[in-house]
Length: 273
Ligand code: SAM
Image (cartoon, rainbow, N blue to C red; front, side, top):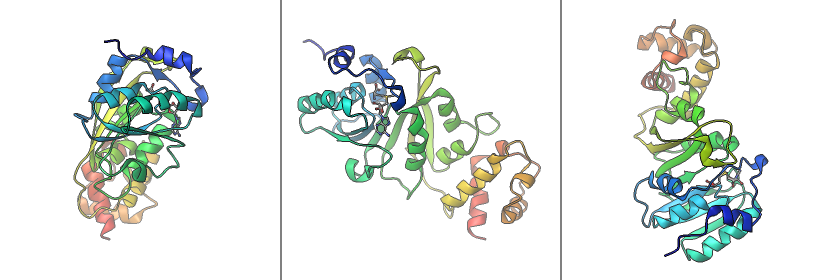
């Protein structure tokens, strides 16, 4: 049986030259797309929310796993190609024309959806932070997201690493992120300047008694001046200095040496003070 039309032809037929302004770098290799679609685990009958389907390569790979997909795409030029997929996978694909930063994704995708996206780099981090915020456990089951390699390394970084910072703590204090796959620049058309990686995130249990907003303010202050000692970077938060003392955390340490568990303990102490 002949396979699906090569993506290069779908793109040519619909005149979908990648637009830099929309962060468009398409993946055309169907084997690679199938490997990305396999990262969340078995998706038969599962709900998937895809951001930025573009010409629909990853969308098709997801549909071929048996998933039901809701996809939001901002570039109206892609809609005719996606409508063809909607017709082929009757009842299993719903395409929304719109901006992922503005829609009520939970209402559209439904609770329990797996989020999968080859994200535009400029909106990727904003969406990740949104998905990591809010009530816990989250409405989504897992995140499978393409990032620039350097951002992926920041998400999974451990203390002591040059990549460890706010994003690491935000991603790790009540979730477990891992780099699931490195992706070479040449996998994209056009090739971006930097390497990419797919990050897989699953929710973990939320530690008791911690205010997420406080934890964020704490890491913003601590890493805002990452080369400084905590006693200086947290000066504007006198309660935090008291909490350091109470927890026996040396105020001469720098933020990049403070573990996620220590930041959580500090935020808990502040939440109860
Ligand atoms: N998923 C396709 C693939 O893997 O080949 C396309 C990936 S391309 C890097 C990013 C896609 O996201 C583009 O189709 C772009 O138009 C779309 N996009 C950019 N910003 C968006 C936004 N705010 N909301 C929804 N889609 C967006």
